[in-house]
Length: 326
Image (tube, rainbow, N blue to C red; front, side, top):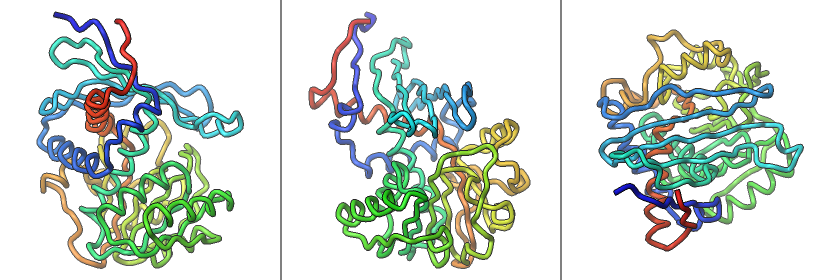
């Protein structure tokens, strides 16, 4: 019999479901193993672009092993701060994998933030040195927070150097992250200070089709790992083209974005490794402590379909959300 109701979860409902970062990291690790084995369906992202550097994307995916099927409809508008509305907004729809009937709609912001940070942690386990302790964060917003949270679950971090073009945002970030995770968080005055001598570097600024990058090749030290959540917005071409290993969550999608005008100065195709292949051992992980490695993960619907069902199940168990008639 067709299900006649679906569960609606607001952003507050999603947060109150209280799915842990550890659960999300574990779910993404499994998802990328299956991606590397060819056991998931992740069609290319489709989108519209109504403003410069802004996007609205349709992101479907299917993970048969967990029966997770659905789509995220998400917008990212960097100029939204001018209107006092979130830069990222959207919805996730979960569908029954047998009938296709939708059974849940939830706000996507919490899921997007957490799964993005979680994937950085997954990539860092493949590519960062095991003794990595110093983390540089450029961009002290939502992603700067979730990426540090996820990394703190996998690494024994003892120093964070945080930079933001908004000095007040950096100070607020440092205070919040130090109290929340018991870390030493130092606000620095330049991007260079958040890159030099750091074992792991995360850049999380707005994505731009025509960026003005500042990170020099000489700043990125031997043995370091970088996760540019903002594509090449901060990284000069000579850095991207001179790392020892370059990876992404989906090679086809990365090249598709390049065709659209983003990330114009990537390494040659044969030097770009897919995270699914890395997870299954068909592509290399870190080989020694001197390699400089960069993982430019674009964000896949696979990540959302690994995470959203966890939220749905937790919300159902806790009686959270509003049931709506179909």
